[in-house]
Length: 408
Image (cartoon, rainbow, N blue to C red; front, side, top):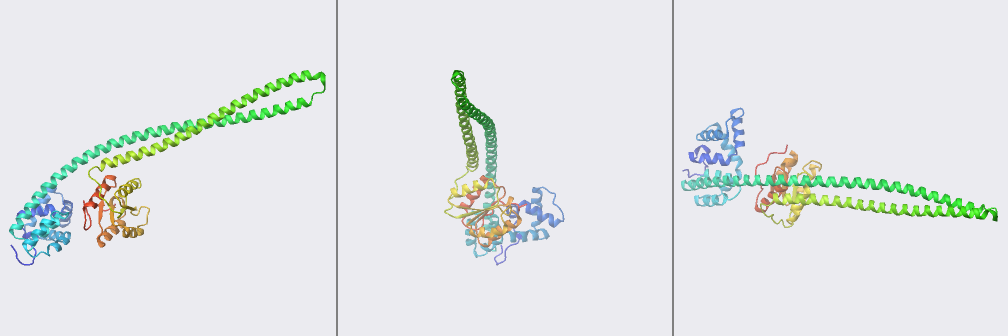
């Protein structure tokens, strides 16, 4: 075992260490891309064959092992600098015991095994610890997949219920709108009839006045009086008809007002029902754990569909944080992103719906200012809850999470 200051190279590690180093420290897509580039084409072997081939090549010094050595040193440069501060096997052992509990297990494994002070006892402990950790990760992945299937089933049920509720509400609104339209048309018709009757009544009153003024003498009074009585009866009849028409018009107007109020109430109920259904879906999808307290810290959400931004605001403000948002270059100018990043204490970046420029601005700013950042690929309420949960757990450095793809 080397005792100088030089770290061991990949091909200098024992054979039993190559499998966990290749498997844990190099994600399969990275390994496939590197080997394909080295071989001058696309690697066609399956994942297992690719893994075994890389182990065989790393057993000796060669172009592939040197290429992977360089990749591992670049990928885990921070862990290598941290491990280099430990000058004894005992100090390095304590560092390994603490580092394997963190998020960068691959970096801790590479830094410990290649350290010049990694003796046989520490090497055996590291390999045993990483072996058991791989079992635990496999079991956790299976549990996560099962829970994901359950949540997808629940989401499908809630989606169907929401669609049914929206269909019922739409049908009800259409019926109320038709009733209101018919009532308004009837009201206009009655108003026209009322105006015509008022005009007729006024004409009859004028006619009655003319008759009263045109009586020539006593011999005609009896005939005129009888005629006058007939006209008065006609006027009374028309006045009663006028009163009836006015009352009917008032009833139709009240009916139209009631239908208008019912339409407004139906629209309000629809909005409340949609909000409650969305909150129920978000509550069930995020039932895996409680949200942390953000203690008035500003949380900047970069990206996200407009429909889910209000839900993000509600989640963050519910946990005591202040919500900031930038759409990642869709409508907001990317030049304004720097000011938003400077004002934020925590950053949540939705890589699937922002521009390349916005993505690199977020990454560069958080790295330079040592600001906590979570990258999530698909915008959803459950993804936001998990992001807030990870912000609650992490206390130092940038939160990478699962390696997301760059924005398209």
